[in-house]
Amino acid sequence: MKLKELVENKVKPYRPARPPLSAIIAGILGLLVEKKNSEVILLPGIYYGLEKLAQKYPKYFQHVRFSKVGSEPHSERIEDILFRMGAFGLFSVGNPKFKYCNMPKAICQLVMNDIKELYGKEFIKALNPLATDLVNYVTEYESSRKY
Image (tube, rainbow, N blue to C red; front, side, top):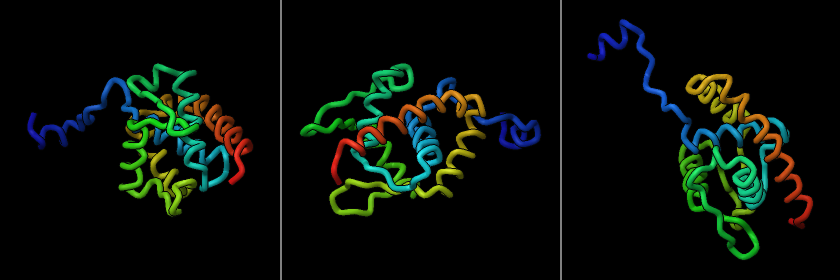
């Protein structure tokens, strides 16, 4: 089909049957900022929470492996996604020890709108329980550490 036909027929762009892990992570983190009502979050707390989510909801985290760096969980795949999010300005780590990350609410809202447009309201609805659990895990992590 030619581009003109696509535009005239308003053919929707290709949407994968299953959203990619990057959309899942971006959606969960966007909801985390909204639910936690904070733009600044401990980065190790995010890894801790995502590791717990991967154990509880394995279908969303296929092919994600966590290892321990010292006593902290770490995943190269998650790190790659967070790095790309940072490259696009959705996520920043502006401190020298990489303990805290900043996710501006306004940017999170734009990301959530894009995710909703691409994958639908049902996808966001499906991520809500994961985001609620992530808030609990991050809060648990933050309260158990002295930073």
